[in-house]
Every structure is written in C-alpha cells, then in structure tokens.
Image 1 (cartoon, one colour):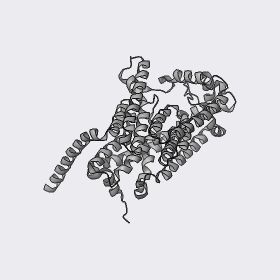
Image 2: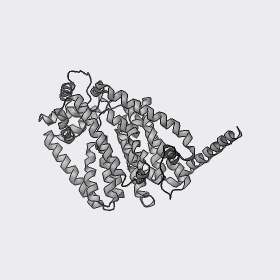
Image 3: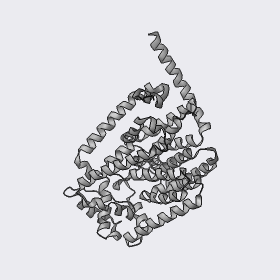
Image 4: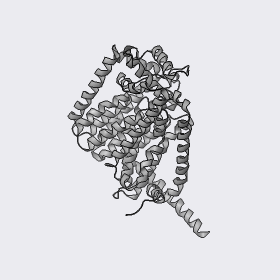
Length: 422
C-alpha cells in the first residue's frame, strides 16, 4: 500500500502546477490557524456573535411570549438581558422561524460564555459527523486522509464556528438529502427538505431537487409533510398572525442597521445593490426572481446530459447566488460541490484536460469566500454564477480553461528549461 505523503497530496490535487499554488496554500493554512486563535481566545467576541440573536429568540419563546417574537423593542430588551452585565446600543435581531428559537432553548440555561463554548463543541461534532458520513459517497477520503482537514480550513466553516452560526446543521441536512436521493429514497429526502426552513432562503433549492428526483410525488409529499409540521408548530409558538408578522419583520430588518449589509453578501441581489445603489431594490427583486426561474429552465433542459452529482452541485450554487441573504458562513454548503468535484477529479476515468477544468473551479470555490476580507463581497456572486454555468455547459465552456492550461504548461516547460540551463 502506497503512503500518501503531503508532497503527493499537493501533486495529486494541483497536478504539474502544484508549485504555483502550494506556497499560497501553506500561508493560507497559517492564516486560518491564527484567525481561530485570535477570535476564540478573546471571550468578548461572544458579545458580537450571532449566537446572542438566537438566544434572544429562545428566551422570548421560553417565557411564552411568542406573539412578541417579531417586535423590535421586545427583542432589544431580551438581548440586553442575554448579554448582561455588558451593554450594546444596537440590536442583532432574531430573524428565524419560531421553531428555530425553540431549538435554542437548552442553551439559555447556561451562562452566555458557557453557551458559546458548548455551541462551538456542537458545531464541531456536526462537522465531524458530516466528514465521517461523507467517506461512504466520496471514496477519495479513504485514500487521501489529508482531505479530512479541508473543511476545518474552509473559511465559511471558520466564520460559522467563530460567530456562533448553526449552518453546520444546514450542511448536514443537505448532505442527507443528497445521500437519500442517491439511494433512491425520495420520501425521506423530502422530509429533510422541509428542515431547510431553518434557513428559509435555502428553500430555493427545493425546485432543483424536485427536477432531479425520480420519485417526485414521494419527495413532494415528504417535503409538504415536514414543512406543514414545522409551520404548525411555529404557529402554536407564535400565538398570532404569524406569516404577515414574520414577512413584515424580515422586510423591516433587511437593512444595514440590523446587520444585513448588502456589500457583505454573496448573492446576485446584493451584487445589484452594490453596482447600482440608487436604483429601487424592488426592481432587483423582480430581476433576481426572473433569473432564478430562468436558471430552473436551463437546469431542466440539461438534466438528461449531466450526472446526478453534477446537477446537485449546480443546484446548490444557483440556490446560494439567488438567495436574497447569502453571507460568507452560508457558503459552508459549498463543501458538498467541492467534495463531489474532488471525487470527479480523482476518478481514473477523468481526462487530463477535464482535470484542469475541475481544478480551476475547485480552487475558485475554495478561496472565493476570502473576498469578504476586502469588505466588498457582492461581486463574488457573479463568479459563483459563472461557475454554475461552467458546470451546466461543460463542453462549450471548458475550451477557455483548456487554452489557459496549455499556456500554463508552456510557462512550466520554460521554467524547467531555464533551471536546466542554469
């Protein structure tokens, strides 16, 4: 049995051009380690974490005041209680459904800093569970153990752990949907599809799933069953006109003052607001909706030409880019397309030209979230959209990347020739 040394790891991933990317990757890993140490070592970062918004909603529901869940003054009062003895002048609102607030109630019985540490442990365990289950479908993980470390260094994973987000659960839910559809169990996949309500914007994935599911009726029945159960439970917790109050609250808090900064979003809607800040955002909503429907049309046209794995990856990319509220931690779901494409990359059936095409996409998806460090992330939505179309139309678009590959090969040969002459 051949040992897979770190050097072979970089060659296997990046091919002959590994010397271009490897130094940058090593520096990146050092940066990620320092990032973890800085943020997790400082206890006051808990006060600015997203966890306090989830605990705010949980405290309101726990005290039986669900009808006030979407009241700004009520949330602000409870949030000050959550962070005592510290103070803050702005509200980080709870914008989830009532059932999500209910799920966070157990953490309200602990002091804030303890709850934050416990949630880090929970997130880590969910991530480990995802990795352990992934090896069944992504066989390269069994041979190339270093790839188990890839999620821990993926920037959306880092930010989700540091700021106390729950998107690791979203990742696990989508992975289970993927696994059940692969095993031809559409009813169970549909039930899990309803759990996407933990992040309602990711319901945009459901139409893509229906299109690629063989047992569409079973999937839809499962989805409607779990969605109805969650909706009714939320209705009982809220004790009022739930839908109108929730939608009004979302519209009211979808502003920079409440943390929804469009320049930090990886969505097409955010990109339009960044490029054309003076235009009425309702126009962007209509345009975003039209392009989402058009992407479904193109997706449906290509179903017979692409594999299930490729289609699932494209569905995730389109969902992320057309969601109105996609932040850097939400890109954690890109781990599934990344693992799918890595499986294709390491397949012996994959041609060398296609491998360069896949490597280019993989490197882009992996490092793209870092653009948030510039303070302006919205333009990245156009990159995600471009990658989705590259995967949707592989033959016509890969020619461009093949031409780039030939150019890089020439540069590599020139470099080796110069070293030989010296």
